[in-house]
Length: 173
Image 1 (cartoon, one colour):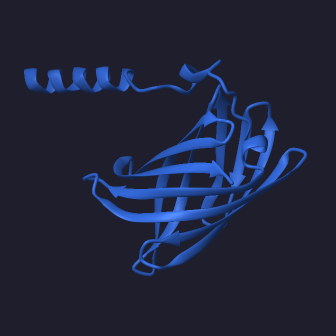
Image 2 (tube, helix red, strand yellow):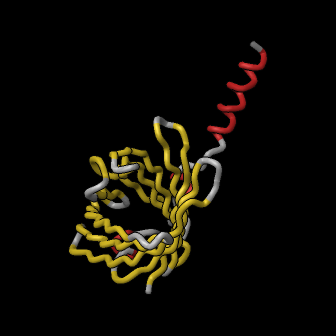
């Protein structure tokens, strides 16, 4: 019983140590998706499994366009195994610092909020695994480094259990 109590306290302490979006309020430069994701961008990234083993590397060519509070981010992925894929995000700015994103493989919408230089949005993504649909939850954190560079870190979960991570560098061309 004493061990169970100790494990419970440890979990609570670790949960309290997690960064919150509000921790980035006031951090400069201020992130505005309609400014950063406007024009041509290039990204490089990797996918790691639950054991931190890199199992996929990729490059992404992106083109973002905005009209008022509505944006389109057209992404073409080039994977290290020679395969390619496409995702088109339709992004709406719903209020200052609040965004909704939709894409064909996103179930529902990605609801995001910005604080300072950081955006966090959580959404469900449908992948194909051996030809069958497989849904994972992505906890996506985008950190604006400067006006031309961003780092994106994403935790992937299935049934609430971490199953991998994605790390992406995004830069303006």
